[in-house]
Image (cartoon, rainbow, N blue to C red):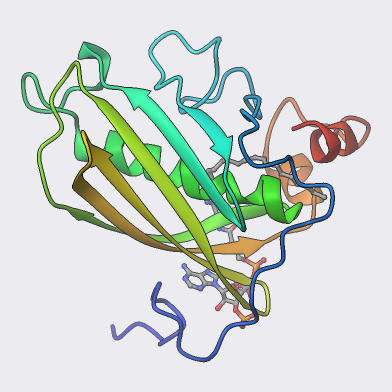
Length: 182
Ligand SMILES: CCCCCCCC/C=C\CCCCCCCC(=O)SCCNC(=O)CCNC(=O)[C@H](O)C(C)(C)COP(=O)(O)OP(=O)(O)OC[C@H]1O[C@@H](n2cnc3c(N)ncnc32)[C@H](O)[C@@H]1OP(=O)(O)O
């Protein structure tokens, strides 16, 4: 089946430029985990990435995580799916600056260099802009300054009820806490 042209992370028309929300955390602010059991950023997850994200200037986020033995695919090397997880989380962190709930619709990943256990991956995500509910963004992952990963993504803005309807641990009462202090 041929995919419709909207199913690509390359914008098909000119985007509305991204606007940093007035209540966005200041550049340099370390962002709290949005959920303590999140496999990417949760401090309570036993084998998660414990990825730490920081607000950057404009609509950008940086992130960092150290690859451990829990993240292997081939012996001694990070699994590609785990690396996609790190990119997804960093890109998702743009929601902090936009103050819009959104979910990943599409994530295209280029694996450029292998990522060994024990190394620290530095990630950077940038919002390119919007086409209706679609948010387009790019990310890069570096090891000691050398590009190891690139990603292009489409996130789709959803109502906060999305997480109540489809998730657990989220109720109509606390979803607004989540919006304010995810
Ligand atoms: C005030 C609030 C403040 C908030 C502050 C937040 C702080 C930060 C918090 C937390 C950081 C987060 C860190 C986590 C990061 C990780 C994120 C994840 O991993 S999310 C899990 C994986 N993703 C899913 O589970 C999605 C599953 N899919 C769906 O639920 C639906 O398919 C959904 C919502 C994506 C779309 O469904 P529909 O029924 O709502 O809408 P339709 O009409 O199908 O699509 C809407 C538009 O999006 C496009 N679209 C949909 N899917 C697309 C795709 N795959 N590629 C490209 N475009 C797509 C469509 O073409 C359409 O575009 P057209 O409006 O016509 O222009």
